[in-house]
Amino acid sequence: MTSRFKEKVGEGAHGKVFKGKLSNEIMVAVKMLNNTTEGEGKEFITEVGIMGQIHHINVVRLLGFCAEGFHRALVYNLFPEGSLQSFIFPPDNTDHFMGWEKLQQIGIGIARGIEYLHDGCNHSILHFDINPHNILLDDSFTPKISDFGLAKLCPKNRSAVSMTAARGTLGYMAPEVLSRNFGNVSLKSDIYSYGMLLLEMVGGKKNIDVSSPENFHVLYPDWIHNLLEGDVHINIEDECGFKIAKKLAIVGLWCIQWQPVNRPSIKSVIQMLETGEDDSRLNVPPNPFHSTTSITATESSLPRRPFQMEVIHE
Image 1: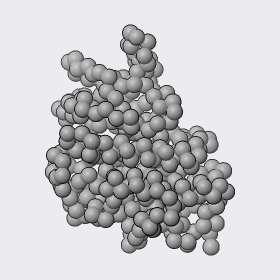
Image 2 (image 1 turned 180 degrees about the vertical axis):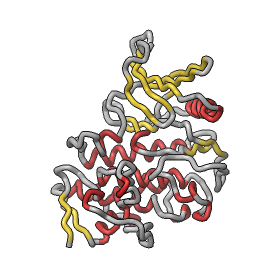
Image 3 (image 1 turned 45 degrees about the vertical axis):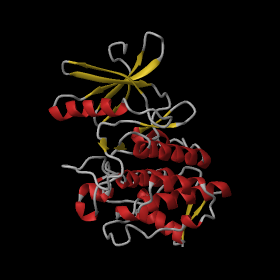
Image 4 (image 1 turned 90 degrees about the vertical axis):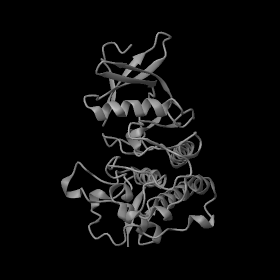
């Protein structure tokens, strides 16, 4: 089916993804899990169990799976456009900007997928790893949430979720996932991850640069908050694009409030994204990083949108 795994189309923290073809000529993606430990075996069972319950346009569909000896594989539809990551911060620095309206549609689609996971299944599903790499795009750029290896099922209406260890990707993990001093782990933890993703969509740059030691602690939500407050100005020639960018930024900042209770529900997020720019709920929230002294903004760390934004410092 995979021609001896000749064509790799992606690689994540939990395994490699290869292109394959079924007997009916349908192209698929085959995810070979790194299943060398007991924990990774449990990860496979978790992903199969959860994916078997999910049917939504904004969530990838599991077509099948294989468990033979130490080999474990998951079979999904192939998405030739790849992940959102390659469009919002392409590795070759080429201009892949898809336009503000399309970004807004993608943001709403991801939110609807999260809403389905939180409220549309028999149990609530916490994804715990919402990030651009795990958002796949079909040929019409409809977003699909993928990679449920870290996901967790919980009864609906439960206010807190028990966890023995932190899970997620650096830069997207909610504060309470790392330390209970910030509150209980809950559905709001996915909201935080989604908020960071929205801010990256606006800025076109990772919120944390793990490849550069000197910028390892540089986050830019603080910069975006200053932009919205008027301390920094940004010029987008298209007025409609400017309004969309501002809306995405405001919603993103609400989603990354440090205390889970201060973050909106995913239903409220969708309502804010779909409403007009004059909605009273689109007020700029408190700066979640105002008291964080380790955050600085270097020229290289500022958000970028090639040929779309001009930053003007006052």
